[in-house]
Image 1: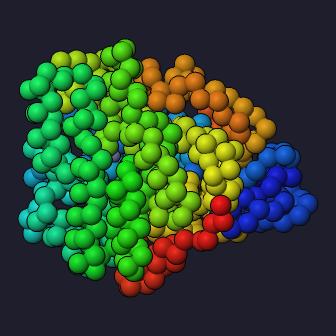
Image 2: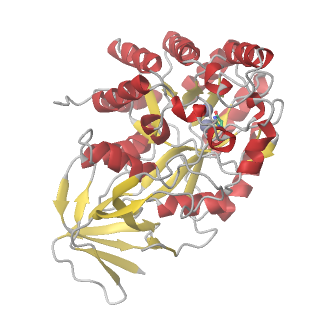
Length: 479
Ligand code: DUC
Ligand code: ZN
Ligand code: ZN
Ligand code: ZN
């Protein structure tokens, strides 16, 4: 079955040009002027529209068991939301319980993900350590398509990775050609400050940001980067939300280290005033970690994006409904941490980035797809438009508009951190594995059609460092 997209403008991270594009099976097979359709081809008219690589969200948590409950969007509903927003692949997280076998957890998550509508891959979290963990990491890299391992520096008494674990795991990652990633918040400080707030009678959602000030992230970001640099390992910081962490990454990069930073659509556009909302449910709906920040951090994040310090955009999609949030009615530290956004990420980046003149459409492609594909070794299979690449595409209508709302989103929860945001320029058609998956407001993909994406390790690893180093050279941006 082939699919011909006619008359659109192809936009990649490097260039924009007008051409027709033919997909056959799950691949892009031809790009050129006035292509004649094969007899059986379905034809899509993309005149006046942009054809871009399908989005890749490198940070989601579908049906995550967390803080005494399970996230409401599972791999079925969460990937419908992804497709509705132009995202064709997610990289989710396998999070083993302390002492649980990594392989056992990995296969558990693989089973859950079989109902996905879009493509998926996995980072695996290192939540405990003995020599068997190193052996399992090797098995995951060599036989299961995992090339990245996550470390939570927060969540004391649960999944927190202490310095000894970071050192052991980063060393193993380096040996295996995998990349370590970190959630950078000092878990000891968070634990101390949460207890302090509650003992002072600050039990509402306003206590959440007070227990996780920006210095808590700054300390952990500097520590993780220093540990990686000392060992000679590369490192990727997830959900960078503070000026301190942006500065830490920039400093390390300026000194020749391989450090990458991810930013969430939410942290770029939502500030900490949400925690002052007098409506408990609205304030609690915004409880995620790291929390939303005072506005000046947003300026630092946008500068980080523009200067090449932050290379990827994500969502940390981890959806909890009002009832689940209410578990923390008497104590903010028990509100399940998480917000949604896998559907909205690209639209928010388009509106607040491209439309406001902060990034170009080509930078938009780099930030929403290509850079993630490069860092996690999916490029050029994904994240680009060329003959032989996977036919994962989004057709974007720059002249159509919509208002984001929980009333119309695909996620299973009743609130949206982007409620009421007007978007000019929206994804109209999403093509996943060469098939129409979402078209003009309708889901066409079926549950189970999403494919597992194997991500091989770089070998030899130094080739990886060189490749990743290219990304580390920010293009001069004249603004
Ligand atoms: N932060 C969240 O808000 N939710 C899931 C895990 C995390 O680190
Ligand atoms: Zn196996
Ligand atoms: Zn996190
Ligand atoms: Zn997360």
